[in-house]
Amino acid sequence: MNCPTRNTETIDLLLDYSAGKLSAMQAAEIEVHLSSCPECRAFAKSQHQIWNALDTWEAAPVSESFDRRLFDRIAEVERQPSWRDWFIGRRMWRPALSIGAACAALAVVLTIPAVRDTGARNPATPATVIPIENTRSVDPIEPEQLERALDDLEMLKQLSSSSVQNL
Amino acid sequence: MMAVAALERDAELMLRVRDGDSTSFSLLLERHRGPVIRFLYRMVQNQALAEDLAQEVFLRVYKSRATYEPTAKFSTWLFRIATHLALNRMRDGKHEKGHESLSTASENGQAAHQYSDGMPTIEQDLVRQARLAEVRAAIGALPEKQKAAVLMHKYQEMEYSQIAAVLECSESAVKSLLFRAYETLRIRLSHMA
Image 1 (spheres, chains in turn orange, cyan):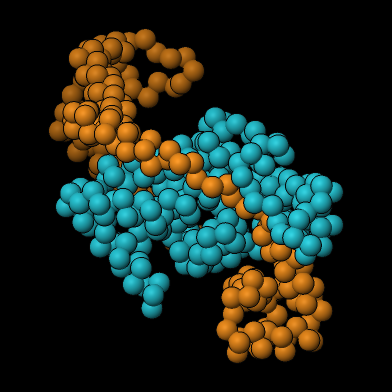
Image 2 (cartoon, chains in turn purple, yellow; image 1 turned 180 degrees about the vertical axis):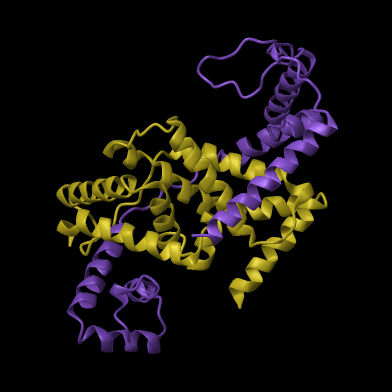
């Protein structure tokens, strides 16, 4: 047997043994282990003493008026409207208030017009967008200019490749 | 077998309560009143408060009768309600830690132990009361869940699986709770050996 005191999964065996809840066969198996395990033997002994100590705590008898008071309370509940009991008893008013507050807040947010940033730039952040009114007008590129630029680029490319071959 | 029959009987009675049979509710009350009150008494250590909480337990059972389904043992459901109410009351701080005085304990009618000569001496009774106070203090000092687990394990003699169902945790967790609780009690009450 694996040592029960070193495994909470089997500690219940010792607890039940100390409480006298094990069958005769199980108890005999535990006692074989206890004969060779001082740790478990000490545990079982102290657990048995704890059990005896706890046995001294007896509960007081129930008061004679308990049932009468309970049925009085039940009668009171029966006299209340069922909707009140359903609503208040389940504390539905709490989530209902929360949901209502959330809806009211959402309505406020949606009805207030958004404030747009009309040009003020936050100096702390770099301007990534240039307002349209601040841009200078850009002359449209003529098709011939584009064609000449592309021809120049091609020529430069040929010149650079021929110079590399001559190295 | 008898225990299984009793459990099935509880569910059967509660189903009759669901169908409007008040006599069945009285039978359930008769059967479970004592264990629930004794459990709550040891949790909150105040008899009047324990009975008040127990009334709340049975009141909730009665209010829930229309929607009752026997998905778990009736006693598991009962003790789950009782545990929640006790823990809530203790956390709210409304629980008055008025540990009953020795004289109050006597007035509550706690039976004196019968000693070998039949009548306890005053000294023996004082010693017993002192030991009882130490046991109550040791139990009272346990963390809430450990306390509930010990009370259900020791005084209600519940199986680990049922304690787990009441505390809504695993059996492993229950065994761990009990191991730590009894370890604490062993240290605190070792001088009583």
